[in-house]
Image 1 (cartoon, rainbow, N blue to C red):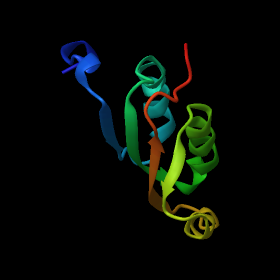
Image 2 (cartoon, one colour):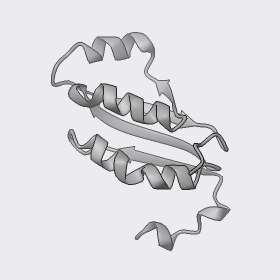
Image 3 (tube, rainbow, N blue to C red):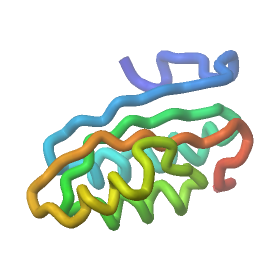
Image 4 (tube, helix red, strand yellow):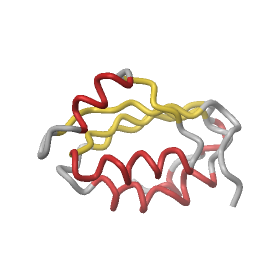
Length: 101
């Protein structure tokens, strides 16, 4: 199935789970045009992030108007200080706040 197979114009929300063992940035880079093209969708993305990729993943989501929904800042800070660790983060973008292309 590809994005051409789905009529996104009828959707209001979309959710994704990314668990790719350290390759989060490659997957997110591949999703960027989709995220920008469908900025009218409310989106929830759960991504397992490895500590080495954390800062770049955070910057990616911020650049695309996503906010961290879970866990709280204290838990993220504790995780970020452990090399080699992985954590699930939940990012949310309300409907219609995306970056125009």
